[in-house]
Amino acid sequence: MFAKSILISFLFLCLSIPSFGTQYWPTIVWKKSSPQLQGFDPKSMNEMFQFIQKRKFPIDSIVVVKNGYLIGEFYADNNNEETISNIYSVTKSFTSALIGIAIDKGHIKSENQTLGSIFSKNKAIKSDPKLKDIRVHHLLTMTSGLKTRDNHLSNYSGVFSLRNSKNWVDHILSLGTEKKPGEIYNYSNGGSHILAAIVAEITRVPVEKYAERHLFSHIGINNYKWEKDPQGINHGYSNLELSARDMAKLGMLYLNKGQWDEKQIISSSWIEKSLKTHSYPNKGRFNPFKLYPYNGYGYQWWNSETAWKADLSYRKAWGMGNNTAEHPEYFLALGYEGQYVFILPRHNMVVVFKSQFGKARDILIPKALVEEFLLN
Image 1: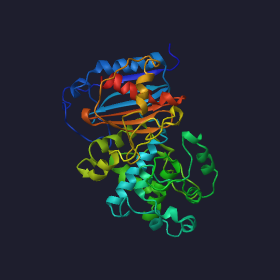
Image 2: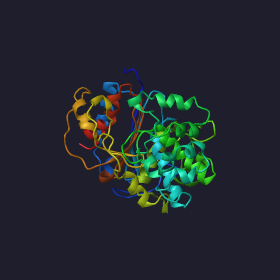
Image 3: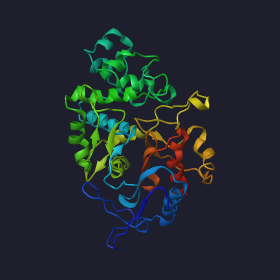
Image 4: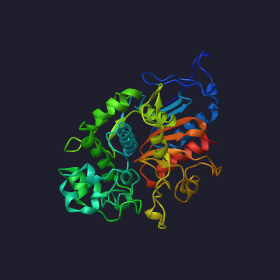
């Protein structure tokens, strides 16, 4: 018996299921299909699930979607398709989507709008002119220059001080800047929270209500929790709780260029900008202990290239092969301990992982699994 009870399900429907390439929308219910009917080899997915059991990887949930159909799921322990849990920094990609919607609707002028024009009455901005020139674009691409020091390179010390503050927006802005906006990439949880605060400030609607009205309701997300700061602003950087299936819905929306059931929920131009590489986290960084896991960053989304191809060098230790085949670029939302939404455009697939990896390097295991088993 394995330490974890594993539920693995391959999903089959009768022959009436539309074949390869047909699309529907899982707003209310997911349609299930056999992998074969969607042009996918079920053996590779079955081997991946068995490998995860054998290695006892702390993976709670996996959802595999191809051509819009649910072709495989994996759940460990007491997790199931309705289990919601913290998706950590995958929250950032949802926040980015709300910024895009707010721009599409004219609530935010553009991603070039400055903090000075948005928070014109903020005391910190008034007293520090460097802050006023930070643009929404800088926050989206982690190039704001804010002195938040709240990522793994700073042992997340800034996150703890943020959570102990009485006014999060004031606290983040009071830290000032350490670099000129646009000059260098520096992952900033505080910067992502400012993005949520921008949505609340400009629309005068609570972030989660704005999300329900313009995003969640359209793609069928209704079971969630989302933590708020002392001013009632939902955390823009983390702490949204969702099921793995609902995480996959965001991936499907982006895979389909913002369209859902004949409605354009987010403009295709915003999707394109979001997934395009705007900043380079590891540019000029040579210390292996001071690297980010991935090399390219869009609007709160990453691309598929890892730092120094680190995942390839680790795969033997993880019990995998060394699949060095070059894959077309794909995109991902990434959260602490290995929460993932993979968007694989060339394969018309979305793959979601919810994990509890303790070691920093092990958060790359889901990427290795995708490439070794699903893209091999």
